[in-house]
Length: 139
Image (cartoon, rainbow, N blue to C red; front, side):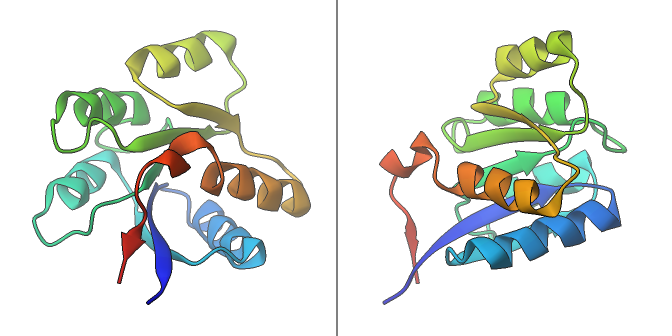
């Protein structure tokens, strides 16, 4: 039996999708990553009966169709998703936006690092945060 995290990344920038995936490989924590490109696709994925239960949702703030803050609010209102560990990973360093994200229900707000090694450490922080008190997914 293998323990693996189910993580969904909501990021519209293809380069950041690739960087996140590469950093995930470097962290070397068993993870099944699902990538979506906009907020509408994220919510459809999270609410689909065919989707696994996700341990972690990583959201960019600026996404097409529905931004990360709107998604967070929906996640927190959905009884099946409300306790999902949700992380904002954005290029914004705006303190007002940070507070807005926490007010919307973010468990963690992180700024995307420019250096790959720092990005690896950011992904490690996401995967090893306090959410681990929740049960992992077994397959």
